[in-house]
Each structure stands twice: as C-alpha cells, then as structure tokens.
Length: 159
Ligand code: FES
Ligand code: FES
Image 1: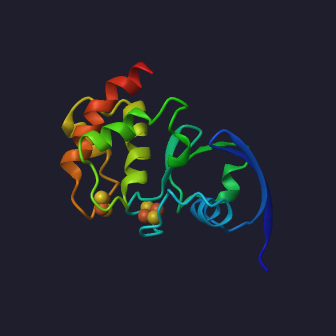
Image 2: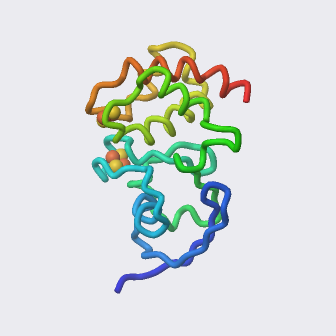
C-alpha cells in the first residue's frame, strides 16, 4: 500500500478524476487505469519514444512523467487526435506513405511528429530526422515516416 494522490485532468478533452499511486507513471495510468493502450511501453526508460503523448500540447515521454504531474493539465493521446470528420492529417500521411510495418512505434511516432511540426522543426528532411531522433523504429520505417511528416506539415501548420 503506497502513498496515493488525487488528480483531476482532461484526457482527450474529457474530464478525468482518479486516485492513483503517487509513484505511477502517466503511461501506466493511461494504459492500466484508463484503457488507453495506444501509447506503448517500449523501454520504460525514456529511450524509445513509443510512449509519447502530449501534455498541454507539448510532447513528453509518458513513461518518465509522473501521473501526479498532470493534475490540472490537458493530456492528448493517439486516441484523441482524429477529428469528427476523419483521421488527423498525420495519421492519414502515415498511411499514404507506408510509414509503419509492425505498428508498435507508430502511436508515439505520430504524436512526436505532430509536436515536431508545431515546434517548427519540419521544414527539411534533415530537421525532421534530427527532431524525430528520440523515436526509435525497430522496423526501420524511417523513410516513410519522414515523407509522411513532410506531407502533413503544411496541413497542420495551416490548421
Ligand atoms: Fe517511454 Fe520508451 S517507453 S521512451
Ligand atoms: Fe515496427 Fe516501427 S513499425 S517498430
């Protein structure tokens, strides 16, 4: 029986309030308490990017983020990015460019990719590769990932 904490936040625009283990990671809270299993546990040590989500619009490794720290904040996961009218432009671009093979890294890649564009780091393939370097793909789908980000970037910048 560890120390618990009460948190209230918004996850994919829905208010969520729950009691958590004060040491729990955001990744474990999403996957084990809320059934949001899009974010993956690749390494659990901040080294693969498979667990990437957004907190207040900025990308974080949810395995390294304490769930208690998102109290009062807005969390967005891969489950929350599609619009009422269909896929998010980055999701569509990943499909268009075959930017996935097994798909394990893909939710994290897409969340990192959206942030990469919003940070202004998607103007060249070199820039994209550098600012996506925290997201590992064991299948080596990097060529498609860079092409997908190049396709989606102008749509996201306009949106
Ligand atoms: Fe978080 Fe690998 S699971 S970075
Ligand atoms: Fe398999 Fe990236 S698509 S790890």
